[in-house]
Length: 300
Image (tube, rainbow, N blue to C red; front, top):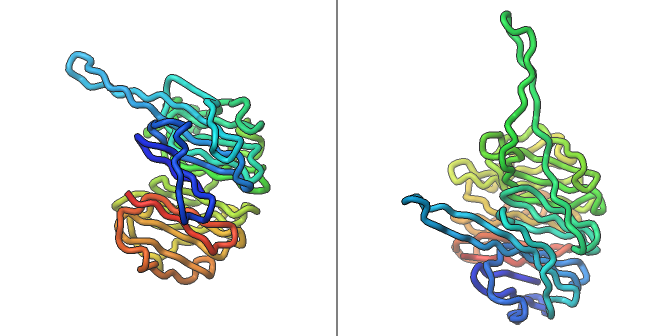
């Protein structure tokens, strides 16, 4: 397992969390996210630097991001990608470690060669047509604002990439989009209106779970048909959901909330139980092993 500290080290456990060791060679950085291949050899982590400056009385904040990679289980780390602008929020990796995607403020970066090369991708602007008695037909193109992606996940044997966020900035609606060709083309998953959120997908791509992160309207949604239809998990309640994780057989779903503890379902979402042993904390992320027997959660 791996965990990162904003303003600290990367920490790795090789014994299911019994002990942890800081990877000091990676350095103290503003780490944001980490992802690990199934065999534990390839690890990727994102760092975002924040710079604030006074511009005639206004404080201007700018971001720069880096992606670091390790091919020896976290012993040594090397800079894989750097850009002067953008905030990378989350990084995900396929089980074999070949494909990697990093998302955040500014778009998505995709590598199909294990982090050797990176390609930035954007979602084309949406168009819509309106007409009235004065103007028979007008095509409107949504402004190309800075995209803001919240979460991502791979499925379909690493062939499909899912993303949740605002593809055209805050001026547009939050959406779920998928790409089956490594970011060259994108299609929108219809039927779900949410305030962004953390997404997790089963390996075959049929079960999709999203934790909507709106503090005033936070819900868990599940689709068992690859996003065609959605069911709200009302039994789990309206908590400040921040993260979800799923086992490979789709049956075990773990959810973390900032104000309502950790929750589990072992029947695919029909019933939910709170994990009282975890206590009440400001939970911010959760992960699940493939067989669902091991869970790891992070509290702020």
